[in-house]
Length: 283
Image (cartoon, rainbow, N blue to C red; front, side):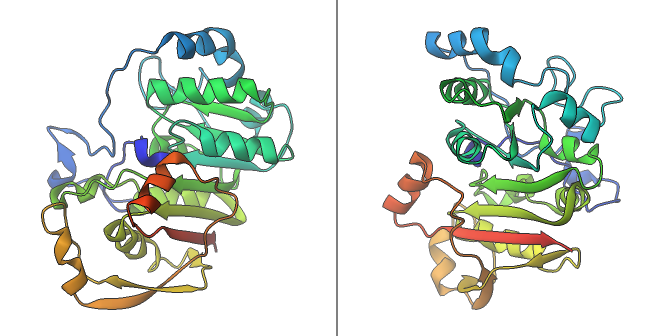
């Protein structure tokens, strides 16, 4: 799942130039820290045997996470890399691939794209896809915001961002993947009536999603579940103060039944955390 999430993002609002607070030593603010990890023998075999079938190796610059020069994520590219012309769901931060593989297996009439930057996550998704002999799933190791920035309008049917890295420290909140610029690009990439589904088990991240998304006039919050959340942000050091803060009611969604219960989500539930689901429809 996207707890390993993955995607670099410029924290500026759509159309605005990034300011100094949004730069780290002259670089974009990223919502991930790139770590190297050696694949075990099982995952390496999966990559050796099946990466050519599932991993899109022409979508990003070699050894980088940005789109290749001149690349356009459009209908022609999708038709050339999937076996069927079908509605496309993109999962931002597929983690180990449990959710996107289960969805692709359950819905052969749809196409799926898993975005993940970490090598073990990519390899594990390849392993699961091969076990199910899936024809409708592809995987890309690329920054999601940069990919959506070069997407053709209407090319995507749904976008999923489940359990993104919460970046709990207050000074790191700017690294969270759900940001106004990404929202603008996701909106443009979605077809009419397309939906961005988001889930988190972190209360402060739920508030962050509401702040980014509810004020937009290009998305409609289609939830029907009323929840109470603090109206002020907390961080890792003062999260225990959240219960005493002023609260307000917010509209969220029932649990998305297309999301399988992964080990990560189960651990959150076992720890007593509440799952917050969101569904925002493109207007």
